[in-house]
Length: 192
Image (cartoon, rainbow, N blue to C red; front, side, top):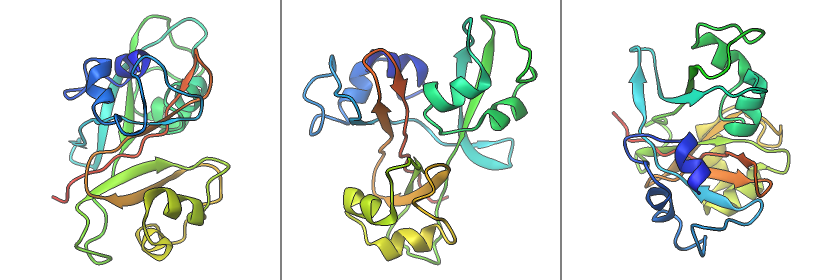
């Protein structure tokens, strides 16, 4: 969790303990996280340039990084390399090592026409093993409700974001290797 807390640092996360307190029921120790375990990580959702909801993380580029590796590996498909390029001054084909870049992740306030019961929403990156049924089971929500919040989305497509209604802050990351962390965030947001 130390690596996650460094990469996903925000007003609400400055150390691994800030993440661990959201995971005491599923992660036995903050010092070791099983491969493929989901980890809840809180962070704020802001109005970005009065255009959309999201949060911008600052990420220091390292030798060998690419926008693709940052999007896919470091931030676990929460964003795309095209989106990283859009919110930064450096093109994806040429950027210097050791500079800070913006990594802006989208959020959702949901749709009050679907239900007024949920004011917080999870931004959930789809994986190749996901399906509407598996996500409904994991989140303990009705599959029809999930589909109504995500009209036209194929939950089995293996990529992209869906928004899942919730009643608290939950951000999922999946640990793929002991030294590499893939982030799969489920983010919950308040209605404005």
